[in-house]
Amino acid sequence: MAAAQPGPPIDWRALFASPVGRCPRPRFWLAAGSLFVVAGLYEAVSDETVKLATFWFVYPAVLASAACVASKRLHDRGKSGWWAALVLIGVALIWRAPDTARLLLAAPILVWSAVELVMLQGEEGANRFGPNPG
Image (cartoon, rainbow, N blue to C red; front, side):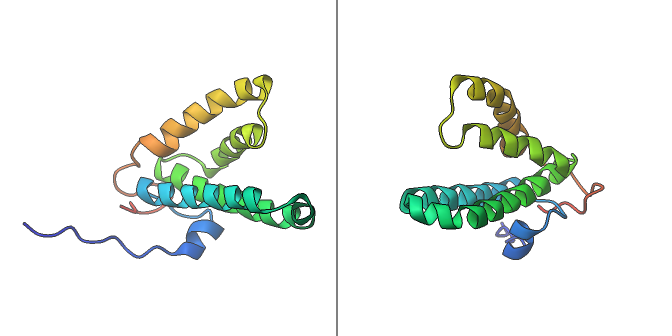
């Protein structure tokens, strides 16, 4: 029995900085988890003075990277990357201190996002966004 061939090496710059192409589930899990860890660490170790000075640099970079990663994953599912905006809105609604109204707005978005991005497989073969990354 032949050993499984490893996939191509991860191009980290393209993964986090470009919305072009496709991203398979395992790579999406790794990238999304990394972004949550970065944002969580930033929130945990930054005091209010540091956040005041750096917030407008850190979060735009994290959100842009998240949009690129989500876009690629949506492309793998055969959907437009513009749906990533809805995913980011859902996350933003509950990020710091969700109240009941925001949670009610975010819940359907986040459930759809979890199913679409995390659970479902990408399209077989090539699609309009590129070859199968798997």
